[in-house]
Image 1 (tube, rainbow, N blue to C red):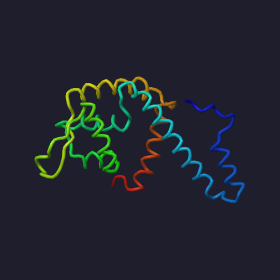
Image 2 (image 1 turned 120 degrees about the vertical axis):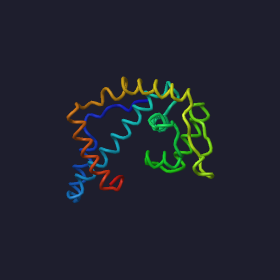
Image 3 (image 1 turned 180 degrees about the vertical axis):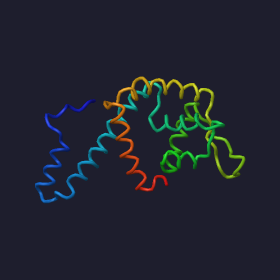
Image 4 (image 1 turned 90 degrees about the vertical axis):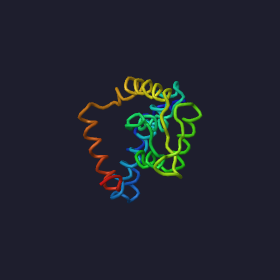
Length: 168
């Protein structure tokens, strides 16, 4: 269900209120953080809607694509978590659901007797390719920004991520 549109920007109004209550120094940062969090909600909702006909979420799609891009189409669960920057429980949950769907299988890691690999199945590769077509056509094709705006935003957010320690 879509929430009705407001006749004003609620984040701009919150920013104004923040300043009116004596927090002018923090108002720009509050507005940026709130805007990014709202944008994340919007994008995740759109991605999940595009993937829903394939019985995927964006989190599971990310796992499928990571496995698709790996040379052997398999990776240790810990490496999946590090590359997707999510906690082990999230990886276990996503891989478990993909396994139930027949898109991934868990196999022992021959390089680590205690470890487990997630391996992409043939059906998983097919669904990943179909999902990527859907994402490219129905989602990534129109984010509401032109190429230069997307590049600029990417660089701004990259700096934020780097400062937070996501990468060196």
